[in-house]
Amino acid sequence: MNLLEYSFSGASNRASRSTEELLFEREARDPETGSSVIRRVSMSFSSKYGRPTIEDDQVYVGFQALTYERRRQGCDSACLEFTRYEMLKAIGWRDTGPNYAKIDRAINRIGGVWVVSQNAFYDRVAASWVDKKFHIIDESHLFTREKYDLARATGDSPRGPRSWIRWGAPFYQSFVDGYLATFDLDEYRAVKGGVAKKLYRYTNKRLWKRHRFTIGLRSLAEEKLGFKPGQFESELARSLAAPVAELRRFGIVCVIKQHGRMKQVHIAKKMKRKEANEPSTPVPSLAKKLLDRGVDNAVELVQRFDAERIRDQIENFDDRTKNGNDVGPGWLRCAVENGYGFRKGFKPSRIVAEEKKAKSEKRRKAVADRAREDAELKTQQAADEEAFAEFLKFRNSLSENRRQELEDEALSKCSQFERNCVVKARRNNEIGMFHQLLWEQYIIPTLAKD
Image 1 (cartoon, rainbow, N blue to C red):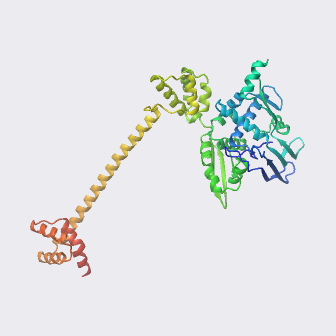
Image 2 (image 1 turned 120 degrees about the vertical axis):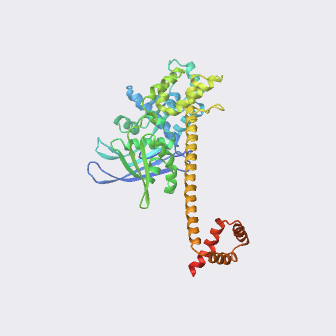
Image 3 (image 1 turned 90 degrees about the vertical axis):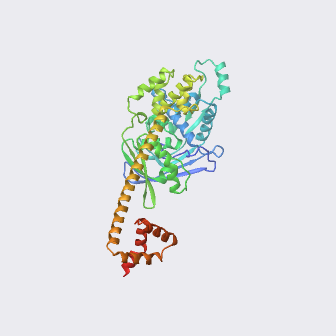
């Protein structure tokens, strides 16, 4: 049973209370008989809490991750015990009050999902498609901060009180049978954006035993990612532009192409990316730099964030320390996680190098443009000199009386300004540009007609 094929959560951070029910329907082939089977999944949502959001989907992934971890430790129970801090750490969220509240709201909305399926899930033991009705989460108990502190103060357990959820029985059986897709949780946390994270999980599931596949844009957006049904495909393509670009950093290439009247998404897996798009050698050196500054989870940070970001924040930390700011290892860890800004007047070496490169490129371009303009000017001057030489040759081929006659006639037709310029040149016994213009505009066209 894999709900990646039928998205119970939407693609927005806002819970939709207007979406009370969704129906997914598709045709599939029975692996035993080869005959065609219609698969239907109906999902209804709580009218009070609404459809789960894209952030709720991340909480759901966190519950899955903790369940896998418990099972590896030998715990085989549909009841998952956890603390909110464990949940936040599992999905890479900051340990803050608002994020604690998001977990509570996510459980309310996910617990309100009721799934009714017909031929939607294949039972390998029974060798047939089966009909199932279930909740994803059957029960839950979540400690508030106040109740947690009270229970910890009065309880006998050394590890403190634990919140818990109980998976729906059919859903938990999927863990036992190994039907739920697994993925790299560290890489998932490094993906930026809720829709991009969801697309990452889906593409990893489909690319598990293949290198590429194709899916309709509408099917991907509405069924797999939870976009609101009925949008234009052009709108869906624009909404997916940022998630598609984000997945390219992780070696997953998604190309949207028009096929007839529909758009399709061609998804392929490239070679495994190098850590943080950098050669492998900077990773240990970056971790060492963080450790030297007292950051105890340095290796984890290097695995989660780009090398460029970490270098910038190390320089940010060093600059603030040098200028007397009271910052410590905790500040540096948060700076890497949240991308803190820089002190006024400070720029990291990366930006300085980029600006220097840009200025150098600008100077190089200016020199090249100046050389091109000089070359064009010389070419034009040579062409002008050649044209003037041809003009003199033609003018001198005529007798002096004929030249005088033609120029006097042309002067009667030209403007006063042109007439004055030519008369002045005659007085100085000069043959120049205005003579050339007089001949080209008035005399030569007249001779050509004759």
